[in-house]
Length: 370
Image (cartoon, rainbow, N blue to C red):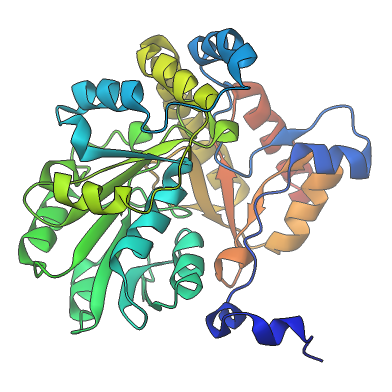
């Protein structure tokens, strides 16, 4: 029976299921009282946060009675120098999700259409319905979950306002090649914005990986990035968008005051200088990706190519049951039913060597291969 309060809610919210993140380690600890828990479900950096960021946080902790510098001036200046853009090309947000949210709020009217990939980050669909915009999901190629940008282009209508590309794509790890992206962006009508969600870009190593950054002043392009992944600052919620000065200027009109904390800003500043930590994170990801690819394939999983810090897999075993069996042993991975993917698909974050060995050992025991 529909509650009275639900009749007061925006009608479009009826199409939304709340976002369900990967199970936190603390929850599993309370449920199972296990001595050790390995979380490989949320694409976090297994090496922890940048040590330089931790040091910066300790220095700032006694200033949290003060409001942060609202525009994140120092962080924008730092990013501008690294990216070879102007600071006026950058807007800072509470994770890259807020950049996506501010884009939709700033440019989309009710009944406009947003095109985005499926399966992909659930927040695109949630935000579309939240702001009364019509979501238009485009299935990735059925055989290998790669991008076919012609399918996106063919779905453009007079009502299309925004196209979101998740690159590398979460949860599949697939990416867009340079030539693909350039041909696509060159032909996009000027009345349409394109947002490239590049949360995992630091892990991408394919020389043919296509970032949209160089297009920010040539087309209506917005690039969203984050400190949550390779820099290990997921708990601080800080990310940024890069676009033309005109687009950023419009988005600044609706950016909430003090939307990023002083601790997050200074941790992000320090993390940008911690090149050794980034190098170690990339090296661990590269080596452990190969380890998992080898052993998961031997177990019988189909493992899809990934340019991110996770692997998208298909098992012949029931994915939900497999995840529950692993949780009994203190290991958390992610079934893909929450992403609207049927069959037995899983997403496994690439962990530290010891974590990955433990995962493989337990998978072999559960599936009878060890």
